[in-house]
Length: 202
Image (cartoon, helix red, strand yellow):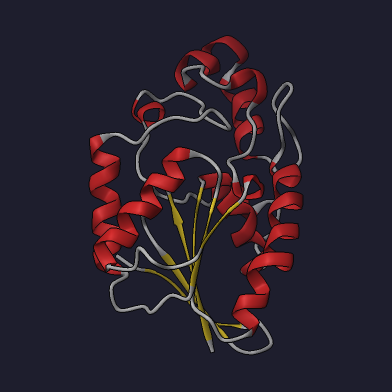
């Protein structure tokens, strides 16, 4: 049996400002760093073999804090842009409320939540899932098949894309799924990668 823990990074400056962040490389807030410390405390009893993280600093700093809290700074860390947040294109940097006023709340909701509709010059969740699952199958899953416990720190949409696959969530149902900052989700998997248990660690 192996364990997979997925964690969305702690609160970022643009999360706090209610702006579309996407692939923009934004720092954590003090609150985000505190959230990462709490997450580390929740993960102290899991013995990880390796960690995977996006190439964006809000995820990397979150992971660094977690590893410091659990005393595992020596663990192998694999960084990849394949785990980066979905690209929000022309929406990146814009305030979400202002964008809804400009384009209409319904249109912005479609860009944010639909599976296959992308914002202008951005990625849909479907686009994001293609790169995330390719990386998962090629790089992460082999570790799990060897019985290792793995930690993945990434982003709301890249992790929603992975959750959709792992938990067989439909295109319609995924629109209602929110991943909160620094709330670890634990999966226990058998040797065939069947999920035995899935739960948030709170």
